[in-house]
Length: 163
Image (tube, rainbow, N blue to C red; front, side, top):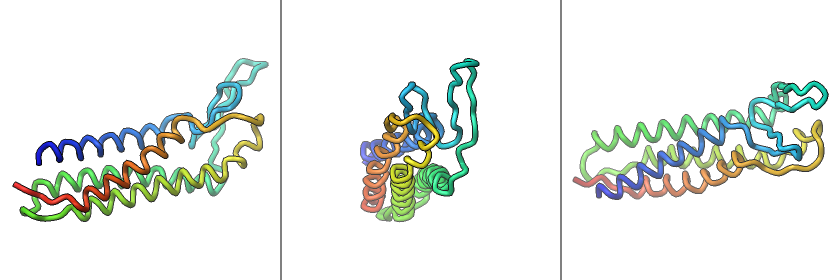
C-alpha cells in the first residue's frame, strides 16, 4: 500500500510541475526567428534597435479563457493534492478518495479545454507575426498533463484507504 501511495503522490507532483511550467513559462508558440510567445506577454526582438518590445497579449477573449483555465487547473491540482493528504490522515479505513479524484478530473478537463482553445484560435494571435512557426514545449506539456491528470483522477476514485 505504501508503494502505491508513493507512486500516486509522485504522479500528482509530476502533474503539478508540468502544469506550473506549461502555465508560467514562455514557449506556447515558437516563431520562425526562434522567438516565442506565451500566455501572458508577447515579446519580439526589434532588429534595428536590438531591443525587446513586449506587449500584453490578453486582448483576445479566448486567450483570457486559456489563461483562466490554465490557472484554474493549477489551483484544482494543488487543492486535490492538499485534499488527498488531508483524507489520507483523517479518513477511516476502507474509505474512497472521491473528492480528490473529482478535483483531478476537473483539472484534466480544464487543461484539455485550455489547450484545445489555444490550438483552435492560434491563427488569430499569429496574424500580427510572420507566418510559420510551431507549437512550443509548454503547449506540449499541457497536452501531456491532460491524460496524466485524467488517469490520476481515475486512480484516486478507485483507491481505498487501508491500514
